[in-house]
Length: 180
Image (cartoon, rainbow, N blue to C red; front, side, top):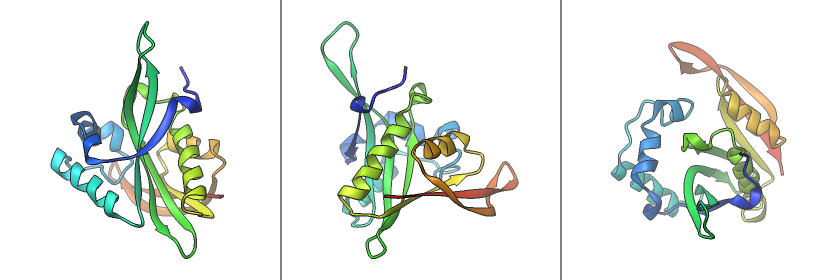
């Protein structure tokens, strides 16, 4: 089942959003293998500290990706934290920033959530921060992320040869961008 835009929303993360489930995402190699978290051990204290630091920052803005879903045979709606997306650091003079994202709930992979979250964060970058360009740095092996960015009309702007290490070999880092 693909999700519609109306089912997905972004909310600035707070320490109260840090859960065992969230910490577990960061300790799951399959989820973080293409991120800067790869190879690090996460715990509640470290994750809560990271979220607090982003809350204080004037240059980085950290959002949770949430879905609204009806409970089975009920009119009640449940809110589920399925991932995170960040804008920053922002260069306010040149009006650009990087975005990075992660869908941590594996059962929601390949359902269009990352694509919708990127669309929404690009809108925030444009309307809240008045940015003119967003970039995303992607591991060459991360095919899913490449597809999501292309789906959002990002272009491959650069390829940094052999910049990253992956499975004991050197691989390229891809830089995607979008003018907004």
